[in-house]
Image (cartoon, rainbow, N blue to C red; front, side):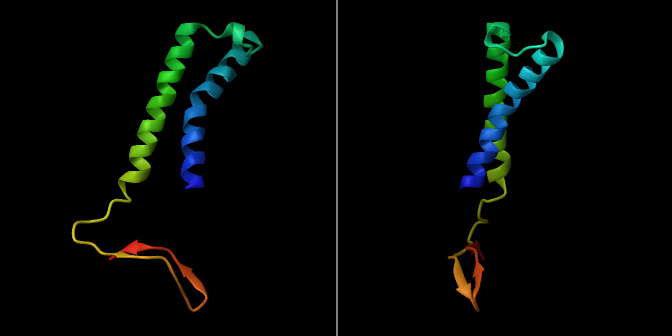
Length: 86
């Protein structure tokens, strides 16, 4: 759960960090006064799009096949075996 949250947070922050790096490279500073409203809107849209795409791609493979039975997580011989579908 924490890993998924950190991945989505990183995907959300990536466009803002890239735009800040672009501002530093071109204007020498990334202060909020250099952020135009249009650029901020495009960056926010890109951030939300990355999060939605990330949620879809990361969770797409976790769907159980039809008729599968869930086997809960357990410990076998001192080794943790995560839950899975059979």
